[in-house]
Image 1 (cartoon, rainbow, N blue to C red):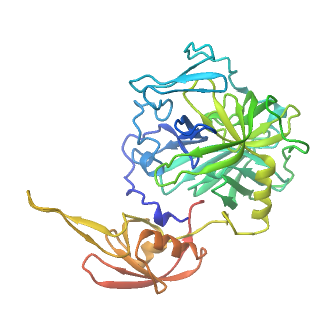
Image 2 (tube, rainbow, N blue to C red):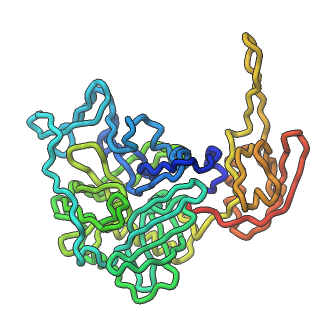
Image 3 (spheres, rainbow, N blue to C red):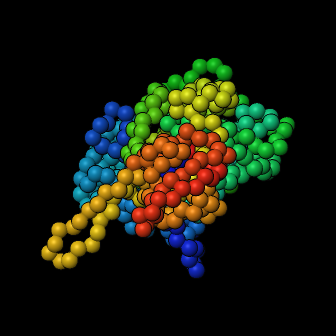
Length: 436
C-alpha cells in the first residue's frame, strides 16, 4: 500500500497555538468485536499512542476523532445505546442516552468498580530486552509511541506494525540503559500486525527471553510490559489469560479497512495505549506474546496479544527477504501525492437545477508534498494522472497498484492532464515512502 490511495486531506499550516491532544491510532481499529459476539462490539483501541502536532493532523492521521467524544479524544465511548452483553463473568450495559458502558458481576448489579490491578513501574527483570519506540509521521505532522522487543544483540527489534505505520523517522531507546538508536524498517506484515526494525550501529544488546516451552493456559498469570500512554517509562500490568486462539475483528477506521486477527492470546490486565509491541510475560518472565490491542471504558480491560511463535514465523519470512503473502520488505516507493475521490467532480448549478456531475478517468491530485517525485514532475493539485510508464490509470486504486510495483529509486514516466485539459508527462525518480 502506498500513500497515493490514502486520500489524505490537504495539510494545514501549523497554527499559532500548537494543539497537542493525545489519541489512539491503529490498524486494529477503535471497536473490537469479541469472539462469539456477532452483534455487539466492545469499545477498543489498538495500542499505539499518538500526539497530533497541528489542529488538522488528528484528521489526517486517523479517523479516531470522527466519532464525538465530548473532548476526551478517545478516552471513553459506549455502544450501542441501551444495549448490554455478558462476557467473562461480567455484564456490561450501555445507557439509552449513549454514554460509556458500565460493568458488574453475574449477580446483575451494575457498577463501574473493578478489582483489576493498576499497572506499576516495571522492575529491572521485567524491562530486560524491551525498548521504547517513538516515531515521527512527517506527512501527517504527528508523532507516535509504542514498545518493542529486542531479538538480537545487533539490534533486531520486534513490534506491532501499527506502532510504526506511516512513520518517516523512528527512534528507539533501550529501556534498561537509556541508549537511543535510529531505526529502519526491515519488513512489515500489516495484515498480521507485525514489524521488524533494525537499530543502526547497535551491538552487544541484551535480548529478551522468549518462551521456549508450551503456550500459556487459560487462568495462567501474565504480565504486560509496555510504554504506557507513551510516557517513556515501562509499566507492568499483571493479569491472567482468559482465552486462547481468540479472534478479534476490527471495524474500518478512516481509510484503513477492518480486519480480523486470529489465534490471539486473550487476557485481562490494565493495558493501555502505548503498550503495543510490548512483551506479554509468563510467570517465568519469558515472552509469550506481543501486546496488540485492548478494550477501553469498561470496568475490566480485555486485551489481546499475538503469540510469540506466530510473530517469529513472520520475522523469519521477513529476514529471508520473502516478500510474499502479506509481507512487505523495507520501505515502499513513494510518488508524493494525496488523491481526491476517483476522478469525479461535481459542478455548481443555479437554484432549482439538477447538479451536473462529470467523471474523468484517472487519479485526481488533491495535494502534492514538497521534495517528492510528484513535485519534481511539476504536478499540482487539480491535475489528473492518466498513465504510469504507459500503463493506463483510471482510478486512485490503479495508481496505488502501479506504484506498488516499483522500488524506491526506480524511474517512472508520469502522464497527466492539467486543469486546462492539456496532456503533460515527465520522468522522475520515486522516493522512499513512510512505513506501511
